[in-house]
Image 1: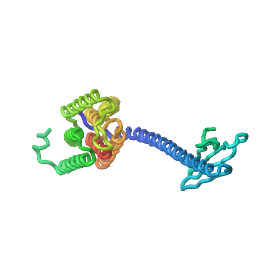
Image 2: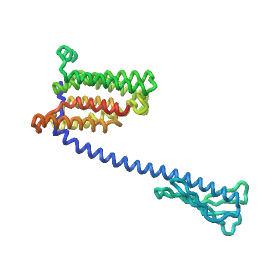
Image 3: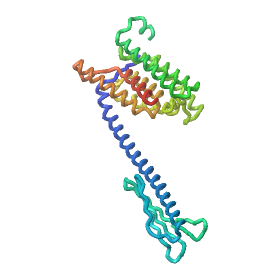
Length: 125
Length: 202
C-alpha cells in the first residue's frame, strides 16, 4: 500500500501558484482575443473599403468626367472616396478610399484608374 | 479489493458514492454515444475509459476510507495506459487521435506529455515535503489522470482538484478544530477532477 493523502498546508501552498498561473493564462488569452478581434475587424473593413472602391469605379463608368467626393454610409461603417484627375495624364483618375467603422478603425486604399481603356485599368499607386 | 467492498454491508456513504458513480458512468456513455459518429474506435475507447474509471472509483473509495492507494491496481493502470498510449503514438504519430465527441479527442501524444508533467510536479512535491505533504500513491493516480486527460486539460483538472480538496479540507479542519498537520484523502478529488473535466469537455 502507498500513502494516499495530501496535507492541507500543501493545498494552501499550491493554491497561490495555481492562481498565479491561472491569472497569467487569462491575461494571455485576453491579449490573444483582442489581437484576433482587431485582425478580424481590419479584414472586414478592408472588404468594405474594396466595396466602396467598386462603387466609385461604377460611378466613374457612368460619368467619365466625375471628380469630387463620393460617400457611403452603412450600419456600423462608412467610407469616403476622393476622386481626382491626374495632372498631365488625361483620362487617368486618382482614387483615395477611406473606410472607417464604429470602433474608429480605418483602412485607406489608393488606386489609379485609367478610363481610356476598355475595360478600365486599375493599378496601385 | 472486491472482497473488502462486497463482503461487508455497505454504509450509506458508500451507497451514495456508488449511486453517483453509476450515474456518472451512464451520463458519460449517453453524452458520448449521442454526440459521436459511434465508430468502433469510439466505442472501444469509451469501454476502456469506463473500466479505468471503475477501477479509479474503487481506488478513490479505498483512499477515502483508509488513506492508502492500492499498489497493484494503480501500477496495473499506469503500465496499461503507458503501453496503450505509447503503442498508439508510435504506430500513428503525434497528431493522430480518437474522436470521442466533436470537442473531445483522445490524443496519445498529449496524454503521454500530460502524464509526464503531472508525474514530475507531484513527485517533486513528494520529494520536497519528504512524503509528509503528499503521499507517493497520489503521484501514481496523478500519472493515471495525466494519461486520461492529456496536457491540454491539465489546468482545469488542477483547479477542480485543488479547489474541491481545499473546500473539503477547510470543512474538515473546522469540524475537527485542527489545522496543522491535517491530512485529507486526495485520490477522490483527483478522480472527481478527471470526471468533471471530461464531462465539461464532451
